[in-house]
Amino acid sequence: MTEQKHTLNTNKWIDNYADYLYNYTISRVSNSDLAKDLVQDTFFAGLKSAKNFQGKASERTWLVSILKRKIIDYYRKINSKKGQAEVRMSFYDDGENEGSWLEERVPQSWDNASEKKIENEELKNQLESCIQKLPEKYAIVFRMKNVEEFETEEICKELGITSSNLWVIIHRARTQLRKCMEDNWFNN
Amino acid sequence: MFKRLKLTCDEATTICDKNQYGEASIREIIKLKIHFIRCKICAIYTKHNIILTNFYKGYSQRCKEVKHCMSVEEKEALKIALEQNKE
Image 1 (spheres, one colour):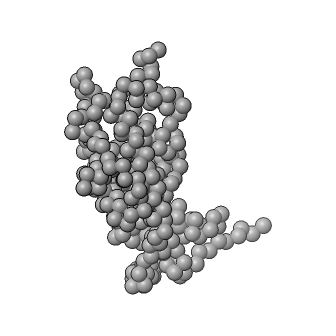
Image 2 (cartoon, rainbow over the protein chains, first blue to last red):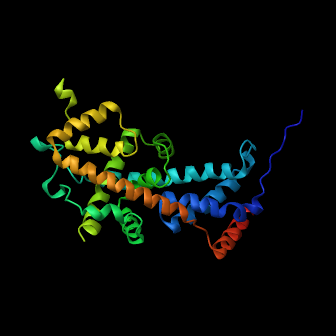
C-alpha cells in the first residue's frame, strides 16, 4: 500500500488565511502590530514544518494550531516579565484587616441611570480605554473570557495557567476595570 | 461550622466575579449570601458587578461585529517575505 502524500498550497496562504489569522490574533493580543508579527511568524513556521503536515486537519486548522502556540509563547514571555510586579488593588494584605476593603477602594454609589447607557458608543470607547490600561496579561484573559467567551478550561489550556490563577486574574481585572469606570464614567 | 462558612471580602468578591460567569458552586453562593448579611460593601460591589457584566456583554457584542483585516499592502509585503523564506 502506498503512503498518501499531503501537500499544502503555500502560494494561497496569504489570500486565504491572512485575514482570518489576523482577526483571530488581534482579539487575543489587542495590539495590531504585534498581531501582524505573530501572523507572519505563523506563516514562516508553517513553511518550515510543511513536511510534517499530515492532512488530518484542514490547512486553516493546522495554521491556527501553530498560531495558538505562538500566542501562548508570547503570553508566557510577558507573564515572566511582568507577572511578579503586580499589586493587589483593593484589599489589606496583612494584619487584622487582611482580606477586607481598603477605605479608598470601597465602591462608590452609582447613578441609577447608568444601566440605561449600555448601548452608548462613548461607553464602549471608555471600556476599551480602561481595558487597555490593564496589565497585558489581565487584558488577554479578560478579553478571552468576556469577548471571545471561551470556556475556563480552554483558556487555561491555551495559556498554560490553572483555573485558580484564571479566577484571580479575572477578579483583579474586573476590580481594576470597576475602579477605572467609576473614576471615568460613573462619577463624571 | 460557622467558621467554614466565613469569607473575607477578598474571597467574597472573587466568588462574586466567578458567579458572573455562572461558574460559582452552590456552596460558594451560600457562603457569599451569608457574607452579605454582615458586609454591605460587598453587597454593593455585587450590585455594581451585575451592571458591569451587562456592560461587558454589550461591549463583547460590539467587538464581534467588527471584523479586522490586513491591508492589501501588508498582504503583498507578507507574500514577498514568505516567498523569500521559501528560498
